[in-house]
Image 1 (cartoon, rainbow, N blue to C red):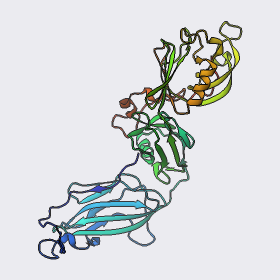
Image 2: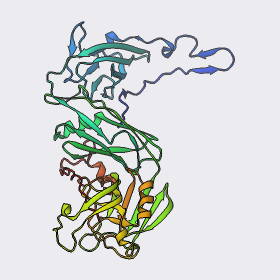
Image 3: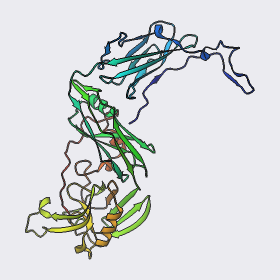
Image 4: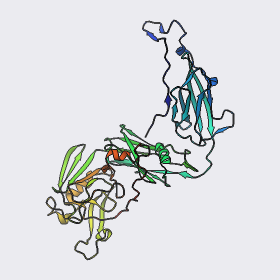
Length: 423
């Protein structure tokens, strides 16, 4: 999430008033040029003390915070900005009396910083001092690299952002550093946050689905940032995706109907069949993972013994995948007689070939498929596809390392791999 990274103290009171005179006299204040705010900032070098290097060739330790204090009783700090050559800002906190400022986010190692300190003396006159310094290079080559997903492209409004770390991060403080460095910006803007699925995987989603036609940019600012002992941030390729229409398909297992909405307008209702007793379709919100024109579905992949009355091995067309374990929406010409009236499948949502082709042509990765009124279990949150939207927002917030109610223990399951359950 993007954050504004600077601190500002309260302005000291000024007894003079600036007036804009409409006819030719410009600005006046208290009779002439005596207004301290009209003057150029004075050099505040003698007014502040900086704990960083002041001699040429010296480097700051990136593992230590920056600290700036006023060196006398005359004046106080009003604003501090620290930014490196790549544009990364350092957040900080200014004491209420304006006498001390310290950084609250880590510095990058091997970076060049520009530090701008603004002050104000007891008369209200503004001062400024600009300092530059370099930080020393990391003492270790151990790096935490990040890979963002999905691939660049256009997706439905239910597609979460995924960050995969190349090594585990368990410590809550270290997780907070990582999370601050993983920035997601959406246009139009939405409120969202990361959720730690396990020690190496984070998901990001807004409170509600992404806006229609949004542009979502994801990047890491962790490179050369100290995360923990002997661990620094590594590389991450930025990601940009866009969203298409808001497409939501709702399957009512009790009425045997699938209704498709586009931008909240109902565009088609399809008779379907869902899972029969013992193979009930999962309830809940799922996200389209992939589309496959042809899939060979075998009952043996889901533990059904060959030769049993429930075994199968057959070709399936127009298959839209919604779980890794093998739940699809697909063509089922063999069950047309039951579609719209009974549930006879092994967990998938079946429909006629013509309806399956229409659905296949009008649904996309990231679109939402929801099942209601099934007697099946609830959709898994993270280990069988994208069940992220089944978690209420307040619970989602608890999965962030930056939340005051963040949980230290989160689900640890690894996603199941592709399985052609079907039927």
